[in-house]
Image (tube, rainbow, N blue to C red; front, side):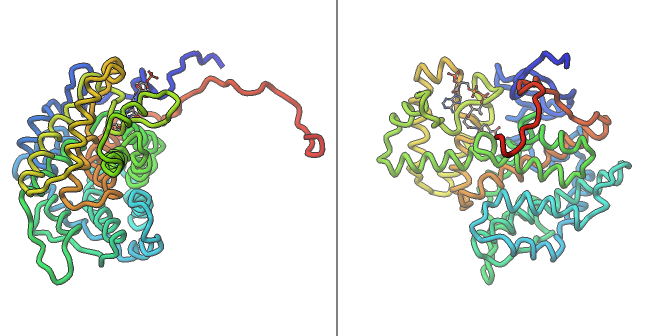
Amino acid sequence: SGITTLDAGFKNTSSCKSAITFLDGEKGILRYRGYSIEELAEKSEFLEVAYLLIFGELPTKEQNAKFHSDIQKTALVDEDVKKILDGFPKSAHPMGVLSALTSALTAFNPKSVNVDSEEDMYRAIVKILGKFPVLVAWAYRKEEGLPLSYGDNSLGYVENFLKMMFELPNEKYKMNQTVVKALNKLLILHADHEQNCSTSTVRIAGSSHAGLFASISAGISALWGPLHGGANQAVIEMLEEIKEDGGGYQKYIEKAKDKNDPFRLMGFGHRVYKNFDPRANIIKVSAEEVLNDLGIDDPVLDIARGLAKEALSDEYFKSRNLYPNVDFYSGIIYRALGIPVPMFTAMFALGRLPGWIAQWKEMRIKKEPISRPRQLYIGATLRPFVEESKR
Ligand code: CMC
């Protein structure tokens, strides 16, 4: 059909022009709208970063306050959504629950699909920012068998999320500022990463003019996989397994190097970062701080440190430019914050939400065409139908 270019996995294909996130994988640079990830993680707050990604500039105090209050106004989820949640078994993976409930939000907010005007688009954006943390908290509480929770509008976005997650009946939840600070930082570091698998999925689904919530739901499904957001869960499970196995990581390094063994060192390697992942450097320091501040002695962190040191000096990993990525240390922090392992990827989704929204908005505003890749056909040529009796 005249198509000759093949780029499996889109390793060398730009799918769009974007002004949101700059990434230089060789130099380990990551910037949102021109601001370095290091500076944002240190000085900014998650909601401010969400505004920056979605609208292009850091908000003034007034803009930030209005944005927050508009989000708060939308932060109740229809009570009937609880019935859908009730239908899931307690053992359901939170990512499946989240993807289904996010998609279901369209049914409860059908007008959100119409985003022809700027106001309509804004309404859909604040709605998903308001309701999504509720769904994440509910997915967690369902898994834990806890009663469902509601937010408190006197709290900041991240504090409110922590309240919805951890508030127990008849027990006043005490907000720990180390926890708030660490979670803010983690969410900022996950907020966008240009055309990664889930973001491309959101843009592709949205390019058919499916609504924002349905497009985000598609992104959640893409993020679920262990080669993408699911890696944070896979890392901690791997580190736990090494611990159970006596703590020796050399065996696992050898397994990862063995081409006949499908095992990979989880949390190692990245499609674009070929020298280091700047997010991993920030998270590593943050993990040490959180464990120190909370007075937690986690043997898994020692294993992580040792494994990383050993792998980084190994020729296999050196020659392939394989370094710890953002997910290598994030699970250690989530665990210290009391978040159970199956929820790790849902936390990633909460962090990535502003990026998905910003990328979807950019795609819709620029009126990008429907995404429709081509293929190189390698199947059978024309052949006559074979009757069942002759097969
Ligand atoms: N352990 C062992 N070998 C690896 C690993 C690993 N973690 N990652 C890559 N390799 C090898 C791979 O086998 C290949 O070797 P060879 O050239 O001999 O065939 C070479 O390194 C290049 O790997 P690739 O699979 O062609 O690279 P990719 O860009 O297609 O994959 C990746 C990138 C992140 C999917 C991959 O490195 C991986 O599977 N890592 C483990 C999962 C993980 O940590 N994912 C989180 C990514 S960061 C968070 C996010 O953005 O979601």
